Length: 581
Image 1 (tube, rainbow, N blue to C red):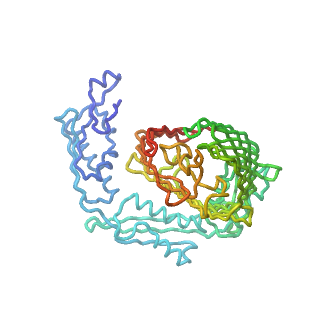
Image 2: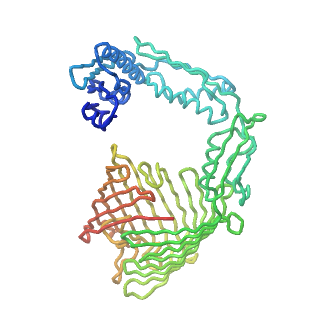
Image 3: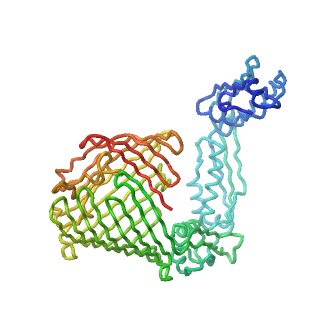
């Protein structure tokens, strides 16, 4: 039995072990002392495999000598994996200590470096000089590079992957050899790859379709029978099917063993989602208090693979009834949507009733998405004691989205960007001419072993003489849990008749550092700044800063922040958590 911490000092008291367990007590437990360069310490400490000798009945001179020889060879083998083939290694077991002291000293000297590369290509790819040239150009361990076993294996796998990815799915490594010249501190590399024959795609066979027509899969499929085999086409099809709302699972494969006349059939297996779904949700934030939602979805509306959804969301400040109709993706990858929305809100003493109608076309390619949209808004507003006013606008917009994060729910590395350009005109049902732009960005980066940094920003502007005649949904306000903390929900904007209404300009910036003291728990410190105004001259950012608690809960992130808003004084608690089922 071993106690916690033995991997660092390996100290065990024999009497304590006897009290904890019955049976043989290991006597050869070592106090490890390393005199090695800092970069090699973890390698040796984690891979000595000292457990093999813990059950020795005694540690006399013959046992010590054998252990010293075996441990010395073990250390040399570990050093070779890092390119050190002529190190000085000293291993000594001092039995005068209790427990015995294991002393290991290392002088690694210079590592070996790659002197040459003999890369040979056989099979049908050998007839293509460009392919061989590309393999050599992309080789990851060029002459002059330090030789490490792990990098040698990775370089071989990468070279093979280049052949497997396009036209040669039966490629293999025929021979590989690394010849080390220890006196010259050099290594000569030799690698022979056999591409095998070039293959093309065969027919696409689909199983698992019950409700939906084959055309739905064909629209998502980039593979043409007879086209050269490309692994990325298989991955693209699989990703599109898995991202599609129609299927709960999907797999795509092309097995070279099934080749017929140089063509590999493509096997697609899908499992359809349930056609209808009812969802309930609960949420709680300090911005709007408790929130409830009901959502209904039909993934096969009118038996045409149309997706119909209806949502009812209500909290203390906003009540929304909305519906969407999504058409199946087109052969070009477009997805069209129609939407309608009825909403009532009471925020910062501004009461708004909204009717919204919209149509959009979206296209996603990898990490990028583009959206073309036309939206009609009709709003009735009352700010404080002011007379109710009505506005309408028909706007056209184009939005670019870039998403590249390591985890969509708990991102720790990557970035998110969005940019929207739009506008309206009197000639197209709007009460005035205007141009509108809105940009957002978030940047995630780990800091050290247990820290993470989040930087985010938001800018907005409307080109118009003033905001008269513009619906509030097109104007800008900020403040609250997920914008400028320390201030009430959308309480930063333009004062009017005892209320806060939207302005034509917006600027927000935020920096947040989180230290994760446990895998799911972290403590945050943050600084936010921002405001909204009707004139650039009035756009004076206000600051909010404070401390927070973070929990990566099973249902999503939970944030608890205590923020001080400089412009209003005092402390404000911000809390967000959402549950769906």
